Amino acid sequence: MNTFFKSTIQVFGLLSLSIFICCSSPQNNKTKDDNKHVVSEKKSFPKDFNKLFDGDPLVGGTRVAVDKLIDAVVFSNVMNCELNDHGKKWSFHLAKNSINELVDNKADLTMMVWEYHNEHSVEQSNPDIEFVTSISTSAREGFVVPDYSGVLSCNDLNIKRESFNDTIFVLENWDFHIKQAKDINNFLDEKMIIKECSELELLSDIERLYQNNKNFVASGWYPSVMFGLMELSLIDRPNRSASGIVDINIYARKDWVRSHPHEIIMMKKLRLNNDFYLFAIDAILKNRDDLSRAARVIYDSKKVDFERLMHSH
Image (cartoon, rainbow, N blue to C red; front, top):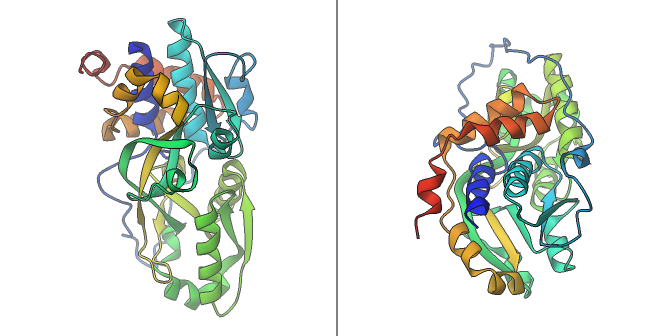
């Protein structure tokens, strides 16, 4: 159990999501004439996340559903390393939608659910699922543009629409972002095409545009690897500020919660550490072509006093 807690802190301490968190949110501090930006070394993230998990993902032990997001995959691999090293029987598998895995009883636990602050909508709409804890309450989400665009709001976007790519890139399965993309589109005099895509596709598309100094609008969440790759700003949206405050939550099936009281006590103490988030993002970006290596760097870092936390009751 202690090993679970250690690895969980590492996982969530990274996360939330996205990697997350500095106490301050991204700043819109570029002038409209500043077209200079740093171009990152061109490397691709591996498309096959499955190689990070060994064996049959649905056989025995606690079943953990992992959304197909870079942060979630890396952090879950950190936990997997820790648990395997100590003989714990947990199985991790990738899911298009981790909440659906809980609903369908294909998983017992999922760790990285982004929801608006104190919303807990998953629990309210699914009687067999229970909110366990928030590992972060200060993440940010919204829509991003390159800093060099000089755009700070939808009003600015409407004025400079002709200088932008014709597509709004939206993360698939984020229904609240798809709705917001439609709101942005309705606000614009000249409409854009809404493209739903995976995180890897989204990053590839916007990084290519960024490399060529082109303007774009895309789903964004902070902290996350995209803010490590590019200098971006969250823009004000129609009837909503630039960045909505979100919680990163752990959910589990109620039957699992009842049968694992010690794990629940441990998880309820988990909170993200800002310095650890920054370290994790850096490790992922330096090893973006080999996420298993990034996980190992994070696992070996011992950046948090896990022993003290493990033995606090």
